[in-house]
Image 1 (cartoon, rainbow, N blue to C red):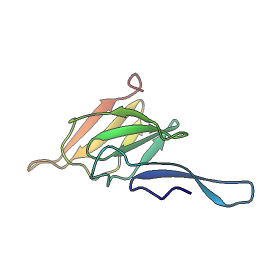
Image 2: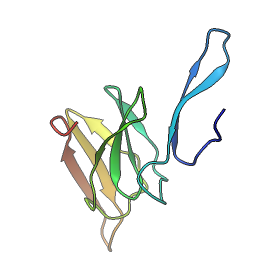
Image 3: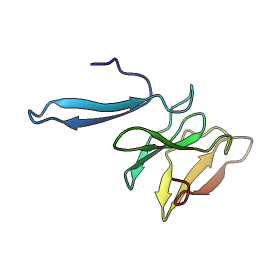
Image 4: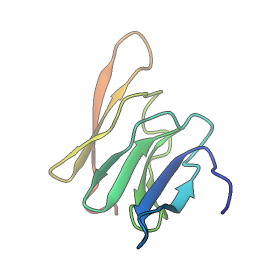
Length: 103
């Protein structure tokens, strides 16, 4: 088995009830500290930038480069939008991104 890389990984049970790693990705940068959210077979997370992965393969689907400042929160996905908090500056902000047509 390949060594685990820092980032997000997907696991499944095989026919003998052993845990098998399906994929592992390092995300978009050094600071992949966000907690992932899964909605509609897509994994959303925040690293250096917010990003989306195919939940089946781990393939990178979308990166929102320089969209927000540092964010350690978990993305919230609802009604075709991804919501993220921004920790930059002296005030916190909530950002909303339309994702239906971007994936």
